[in-house]
Length: 161
Image (cartoon, rainbow, N blue to C red; front, side, top):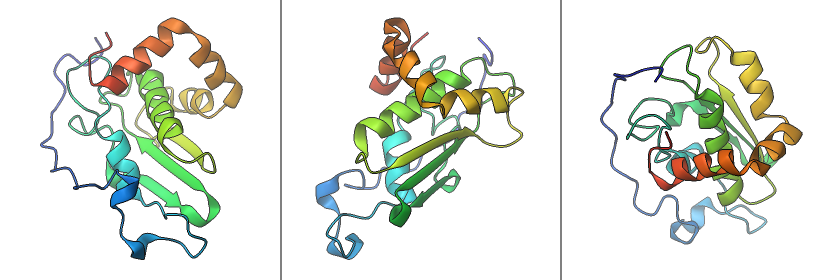
């Protein structure tokens, strides 16, 4: 275990219906009839992903924060930066892959999703970012049944390891 005693933060209350497409107000709709997305909604999708080593959510560990999410709805782009709990976290790729898979499963296909380690927060930042944003590497990782099982465990709210 890379970080046996991580700092756990108080999480904020869930925004009622924020992650539900049907609960959005008309003022958030675009002129073309599609609902607009914002950082808050993306955060609602990723905040409850479980850390692979700890029985805490990524939000509770400070790994994902709403302020580290950028959405350009008009350009169909979403960028999520996350901060591992320690600079040498061996689970950073699994965490990033879990974030990517959650967004791929929930967002419309029109979005290009970038998942990155926040600059300066991991010793292998460049290598991990390259893996997380290479379509072929992600596809190959998701074909690995053992790895996909670990991702699904993180997404289910259970500890993967």
